Image (cartoon, rainbow over the protein chains, first blue to last red):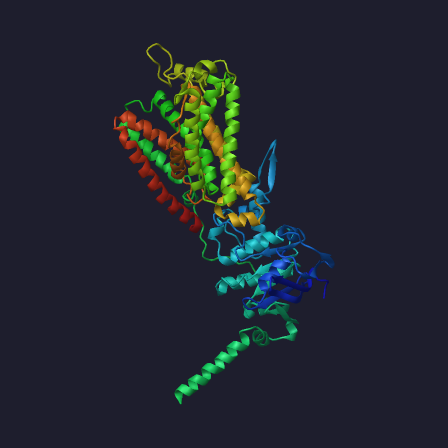
Length: 264
Length: 365
């Protein structure tokens, strides 16, 4: 396996008396999809925020390309090539795709003393970058509000990649989507991986994660229950490991029992 | 490898349909309607003679000077209700130092622009820092500025009006920037060609284009360029459309909004400078309700009250409608009492139309 791009080593994070993360290790290599699974309250959000520089760990260390690093802010993290795509995607629905793509980092062109927004370049680049991710835009000037959920996700990912992300942290990118749109996003993840980007895919949907994941880390109550490569674990084992997996089986048996009792 | 995902539900959309989702469409159509209406009802009264045109353009220009920056501010998702009071305040700031303290006009003008931009920045800071709705914050400024204007004027002059600016301004280097007329030569030439009517004494019926009209056009073009072609314009749309997303992407939302509050304050000062130098006097009641007229012009121009969408060209059409209707009603002899009823109704219709266009823009492509 290649050298990890970013690594958390035995990281712990406390909020007062609450132990949000305890002794968690996690890493992602270039061209790999590492899925972070866990139920609500398992510490996924805290882990993402630690990785993206919102929180600093209380114990343990973060390494970027092998070097111990301390992120001072989310912007700092972004500069070191780690981009987080949050659920709200940071898109402005009434603005065009191209303007969203370059929002805050507008390409300018000089006309004598005045420099103005280079709309041609923005349109062309947004169109090409979306196409490279497998999404054919109708028109780079259409408002983002007219895009489907999957296309919006693509825009946010393509933007992060274009601006130099080596690692993408995707926070529940498929959770709000229908079946078709979710598969569009899963294809995007595979596409990013093929471009040599390390993807951290946060989800509580094992079915989605298993399709694209290379490794799986399960969080439970702030602790890691282990990291498994795809060959080492089946989907059902993974389901059972997740809280809910076993509970669902128990529930199933219980319901079956009460149904039998009812018939008797 | 992943194949291209082409949406089979897409059909090609005509240019017309694209045009239909432009924000200024409603205002452009409204302008045509209003022109046709008054061409029929007031065509023979002189509303569309050279003199009539200059008259309504001058009304439109004054409002349009306010409306262009107010449009930008509203696209950024904020209101400035203090512009009307700012006009009164700025007028007094120009007149009092000139008349009572013997300042040259150019100095009191510069002083006024500086003070007004400072107040604009305070408005902006108050909105950005407190997170309160700008509607409330600037409603406060509306009253405070009007009170300050009245208090200062009465305290210093003992009256509510300061006159005598004309005589002082006559040889001032900045006077011609704000009052008087331009293109007199062109007008005389057009009159000689017979394109513009002449008076009985052989002079053209108008002697030039009032400089306020030039300000209006230049400001509208500048605001349009800013909005659609500059980096700042992108930030304006983003600040009004989804401020959080903009902030996460590194857009300086607070600075953008404060800058826009300074711009509306400066526009109010410009309005006052033109008014004081044209009429030769300042009055504590000047500019009353101009904040609402500006908002009406902007909304008729297609800008959404909720921000994130709109245009400065639209605001220009809104101001044009305002001027044509105001002068048209006067020329047709309809009781001018009906003017406000008409403008209020126009605005409500415009809002309904805008939300239709917005929904269309979000859906149709």
